Length: 284
Image (cartoon, rainbow, N blue to C red; front, side, top):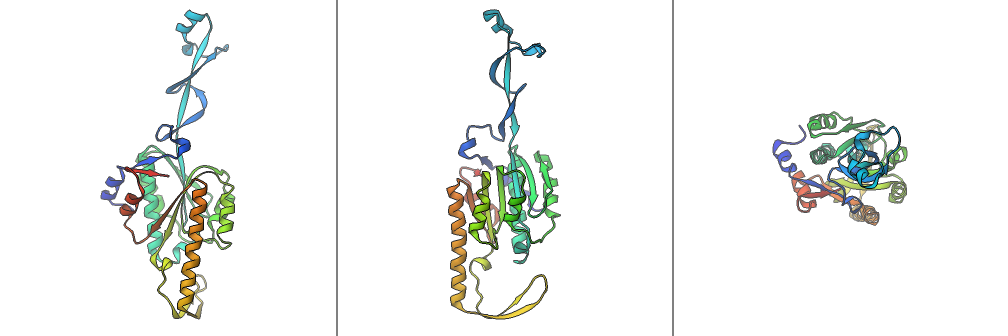
């Protein structure tokens, strides 16, 4: 199992905070567009021939001599799209990064399902999606994550450009490495008319590489090797460029009203989640 029983017991105490646009909605639900039989009274409508007489308000008819029917608002289950990046950039950093993404995906999936929120699981570069609607399906979600195919050349921008639905709630677990740069990533995100929560996954080796001097670079596909010499100044320049890249992505996310979280693989999963929740509520 991706998560221990202790971790699941702790995660069971987390609730999900909605963004301001949905703060008045029922937790785990959203108003449906169709009205009829439901749980909350919506409005009166004039009776039309052929409608079910059970919904006629006879008390109102006695007072007004007008036939009206009660209309109720349906509530439908919220759905989050959970996009998981297991591409080559994740794999080439060793198993630590892959394991961190899968465990975080499992934890978020559990929290959502436990709060009656539907989870639609999507892997980068793959068109198929798997939907889980109830906490009883968490075992299936966990098995799907553990059985996921690792590797692939797709970038997060490729995935979003092929998505047919560009609205709604989505959570992205990735390192957001895009060959065309952060400006291209932002331009693709500009077409998404919904709420995104971005979880940037990184290792300490990526953030502060302790490598300089004579190095050998190995291509993970061809296994070819190239000898290079990296100076300390070049390492410092890399760190500066990397920090600017992710700072720009964070500022862009905040300008859109989206959530941006940095998850360091060295952090314990529960410690990380506990740090980003407010009053046991995780805002996504």
